[in-house]
Image (tube, rainbow, N blue to C red; front, side):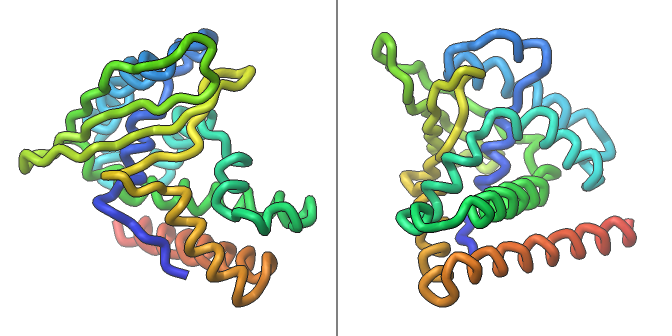
Length: 215
């Protein structure tokens, strides 16, 4: 299975959805949450020499602390798997979510050392009173002058706003994964998809260990 990637977009999620522990106690409006945390994460990436060198342990620790708590991985996995989610057993669902989560985390960390010169503009949010799902629109400005539109779909939960999809130049991450997952399920069923995800994650871990040994 080949996961479609475009311009290193997984890192944009990491940059925009990280949140410092100092604001976790408050449920901020989604655009305010993103706006307030962009500089926090960018500052860490810019100033931490080990992260800039590609230290995988430090990068994974940053992802785990500041990014993962702000994703609804169950909802993301359910959307990515599509209609086959309904027929998956509880054990299969748990395995799918665990492996999909690991896949996303490993994908994010690959791009961390390339963000230091990016700028992020968060557009004003248009949200109806009482809305429980919103789209936060942003522009990623890269050093060559390009502006890349990145839209985030978030839902409100008891523990705050959680991201479950994003669109890069109109291309949905969840839809992209769903297409790849559907092909795998047609070939080998749910267990076939799980096996593929496990293998991809094992390969990613092996590559990370090898890279660390070369530093």
